[in-house]
Amino acid sequence: MRIVRFSPGPDSGLGTDPLFGLLEDDNSISVISGDPIYHGVTTTGAKTELGKVRLLAPVIPRSKVVAVGKNYADHAKEMGSDVPSEPIIFLKPNTSVIGPGDTIVWPAMAPSIDFEAELAIVIGRVCKDVPRERVHEVIYGYTLANDVTCRELQKTDGQWARAKGFDTFCPIGPWIETDFVPGTQRIFSEINGEVRQDATLNQMIFGIEDIVVFVSQIMTLLPGDVIITGTPAGIGPMPAGATVTVGVEGLGKLTNKVSARP
Image 1 (cartoon, rainbow, N blue to C red):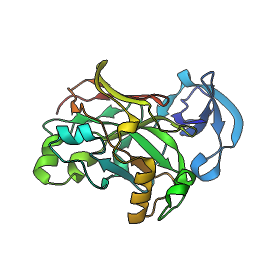
Image 2 (cartoon, rainbow, N blue to C red; image 1 turned 135 degrees about the vertical axis):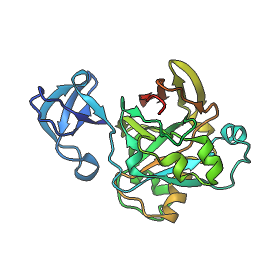
Image 3 (cartoon, helix red, strand yellow; image 1 turned 120 degrees about the horizontal axis):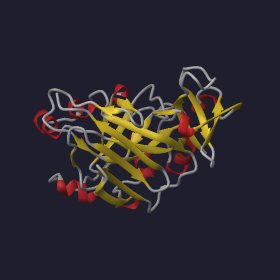
Image 4 (cartoon, rainbow, N blue to C red; image 1 turned 90 degrees about the horizontal axis):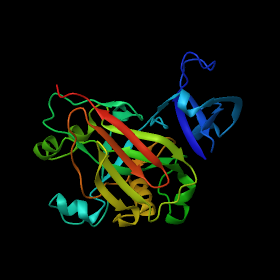
């Protein structure tokens, strides 16, 4: 299933409040009653078209976004770091989350802002100390994320909360794919249509099971929590006004604009 969250628009007959839907093969959307992560997928009978709505971030992280750093060896190398012996994690606030087509706002205190294409895990149930063989039971599905970063602030602060925590610094979307199985799929990013990152998911140092087991040993994961799994080599600054796209084969593309520099 492909789960979307969308703004239906004033002329849709569906009201103006955000809704969840099931994206069908013909690009129609079957409206879902309530948040499917909490209430399951129950369609209301109402339908609309993908081209007639504005997609929003497909998940509302009520608690947290957990991020994994330096999870591709080539990225660790380009950052001048050794390959980590265990996952390096940090938190991005849920207020950093925006959806497809939303604008990444350049903060006044940021000299530059970088793109980082990432696979995102969406957690579907409360879990703690998840054993490896049960990781699949706690994952609702997968989506895409852009871990926007101010590299200068990351360096001067010595930690990553400010550099990665600004509002709009975590675009997520375009939908949640519940049947996706990570393997050798391509992960990439583009700036104004030019490919900047190009790798495969099996190049991650720590795989999905490693990450969920590790994070759940540290903190309780809640429904709607998002774990972003690291980025491959090729990161770099986004010019003001640029169009940035991140993608994973089988999950579509997530595209956002960058604001003017303040």
